[in-house]
Structure formats: structure tokens, C-alpha cells
Image (cartoon, rainbow, N blue to C red; front, side, top):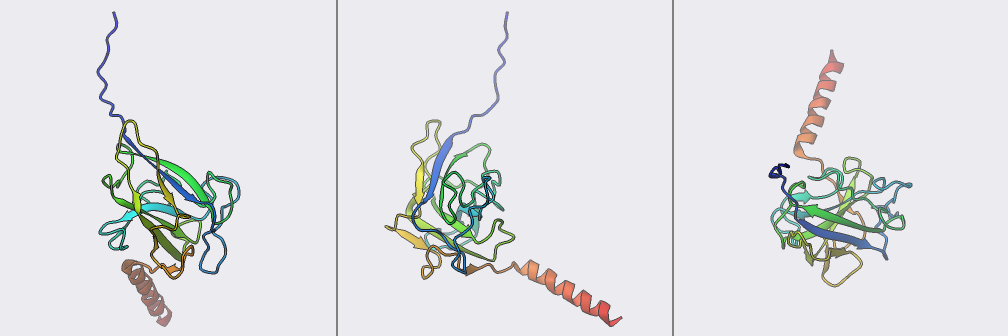
Length: 197
């Protein structure tokens, strides 16, 4: 006689997203194509799939990163050159977001964006730029997900860059948080007082 235990395991519903940029390399603030790294996935310049807390179309509110370094889901690695031909400045990658294990997922229909950084970590970056499109919305979560939502940077129709005068370029300077500036100032004051002794 066999006993079958009832499973309390919950199964994840998925929403699929694919990112593409196969034609125009994304460059850093000096005009150099963002690095694809050496050979391993995850060692190229960082990009993130995310959204803004207030209005992604207007780039307002807090940036909420869903993939990549310094995101709510750091195991979803997103960097230039991964899963594609490994060319600097280009990307093609797919992600499956599930509603059980991934964090900070927005409601289906939320407009998504891609943010590109000029280094292989967010902490090491000095510049970024963000691109979105009204058609880039998160699909509904389902046990039988629909085809991936394509975030195609090459598609110019409806594409909007945060710094629209510098498309395909990480041109926006990262400004340190006020708390970081305060800590830096406190360290400088301590150093100055110590030198006076």
C-alpha cells in the first residue's frame, strides 16, 4: 500500500522577455562600444531590465531593476555579449520571470525599459542611459506563457531614450546618493581634524 502525500509546493507561472540589439552597438560616454567581456556569460558591461515606480514612459520615480548586477534578482545575469555572438555593444538574451522566486515583479502590462551601464558592475559605472518603448510591456504570468515580449532596441518606432540627444550611448552621469556624499564629507572632516593634531 502506497501513501501519497499532498504537495504544498507551489508552481511558478512565467512571463518571458527577450532583449535584442543586433545592429547599432551601444557605446560608453567616450564612444567606445560597451564590452562583451572575454568568454564567459556575465562578464560584459551591465544592462538591466526594469521599470520606474511612477512612470516608465516619462522616466520618473525610482528605477527598479529586475535583472543584473544590483537588482532585485541578481541571479538573472544580464550583460552585453551574453547568449549572442559576443560582439561588443550588442546583445540578445532571453529571460523567464516567475511569480514565485523572482522579486519586485510589476503587474502584467507594466511598461519595461532597458538601462545600460558603462562598466561590468553598477558600482564601477560612471554613466548610464535608459531606453523604453510603449510596446514593451510585461506579459501576463501563465503556466503556458505567451511568446516572449521582445525588447528590441533596434526597432526605432516608438523607442525613447532617457537622454534622447545621445541615443545608443551611456551619457548620463551617475550622481552618488546623498548618504554617500555625506559619508565622504565626514571622512574628509575626520582626516582634516586628525592632521591638525
